[in-house]
Image (tube, rainbow, N blue to C red; front, side, top):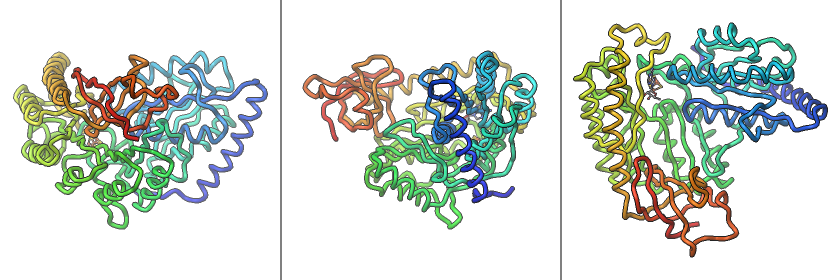
Length: 485
Ligand code: 5AD
Ligand code: SF4
């Protein structure tokens, strides 16, 4: 499969479409006597969040404004996830909910993009059961969204544009509307070559391709100069990064950490096969690289790992985890685990529980295996009955919840620096933020530190010291003791 760098003709085509759409929506806005709006609904991982920021950027570039509510907008884009069946079910449910609005408003556009569109069964279902969807396009061609949108408006019949070409597009060529004023999501590589037997990502996102380091550094420097405090380096296997001129992930991490202005450099998601001691050493010594490592285990059984096509065993994983614990003693280790993979025995599951306990993960994303059409595991014998999967899932949750609580408990009495993310969703006078190790913290500001001229929003992106007073299952409570900037 060829990896194509975006060409000039495509960009020219996009510029023409942007011009035409701008005129079109200006006229429509005049006719309707109101602003034209969009709503981008995102499912799944942070790479999808990042893609959505680009979709929003492109929609804003033609004059649309983000819809103030989740209700109807003039352009609705569903940026989908295919990793598990329930994400797909949710999409189909939500598509059904926009039907009446779309049918009564002939000017409205409903678009579907993201990983689900790379599975032909999903596209066939949209064509058959959701004829009012105007546009379906694949994630590789996100940068051409304005062209597809223009064509869908011109032709007024369902437009499906799916191709398996692997593109790499310099992100500076796509307008980005960043959703957090302190955190910038920066993809450094796209795609996956690993073909874990349960996973659709390699089919949906194509082969691995890395951005040039110089492009990444240019973007990072620009972000730092705009005042972003936190940068999140993203990739399906972020540490498989390998640029055409031979640079690896350590080079990117080093470059990001050396740019003045960032307080936090994070990265997601790591593959255990690619975590070198060099990466952990850099986490241990750098004052800005987050002391949090997300290391997906998937299973603690060597036999299951082998059938999953994960090229490491339990001992390899434990070695990496223990090296991290030794070098980064105040750090946090998180993971992904799947229960109920085909053929998983009770003994296999017990091994997973053992590794979870030995690693004492600070947090974990736990999943029930979901059969994905087209993957190798879907045709494996010995699919596990749902009642056994549910039982194992509950037992794993119990163990992990206890570990997460203990991790939060270990913080109580300490004082650490927090990057403030904003107002807590539960109480207006409580702020929320994260430690360097990614622990979630909710905290109050004592009267003597309160600045009456500031609203909660003004604190977003600021650094402060918080003393931890109380542990909860998924967060820590505390009180601010000092503002750092
Ligand atoms: N079923 C359940 N979980 C899955 N994941 C990936 N594919 C599947 C599947 N078919 C999980 C893995 C991965 C995370 C992003 O999603 O744990 O690390
Ligand atoms: Fe999926 Fe495995 Fe690639 Fe992760 S490494 S995206 S789990 S195939």
